[in-house]
Length: 200
Image 1 (tube, rainbow, N blue to C red):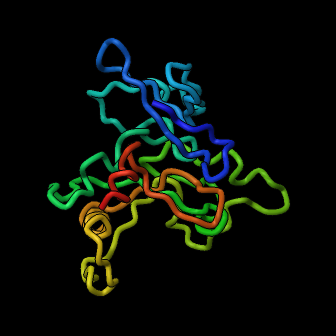
Image 2 (image 1 turned 45 degrees about the horizontal axis):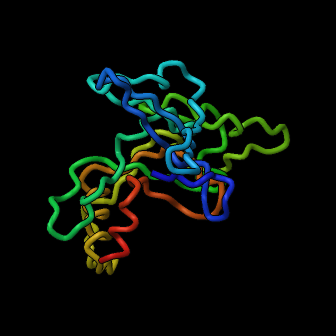
């Protein structure tokens, strides 16, 4: 498996990964993660918290490699097959990423449970915080959801993948886990999901 380096155009720092260890229960979680050549080494950064580096798959599964929040690298990820027409509905919360400078609240602490932290650069500029949003409820770890009175027809969502994501956000919500560091948004998916999406 090749995982492109984050320094290539079009890639971000949010390529989270988890490596299952030989004991079949311990995960080492990192973000970003890269493997530039087949059979080559895997590179990645662990989070600042010791608790998030090694996670037992039989534990609560909350902590992990997302550096912006300290949340799980695998929990909340849309998996291969989940967006296909014949698949069951997505029955879990999903992970979302936004431009923190525009949306995440401009005053500390910058996170709430289940997040363990916020980005280290969120408030370290003496003249102006990088997080600069106005809503104190929008921080790392916030659970956002589509209101129950909104329908796919209201939003004119026509594709099957779009409708599946809509229902997951309405039924379970989406947790803020990382900063896109640019004016776009992200939904965390397993490698291969994008290919499935474009084959539709």
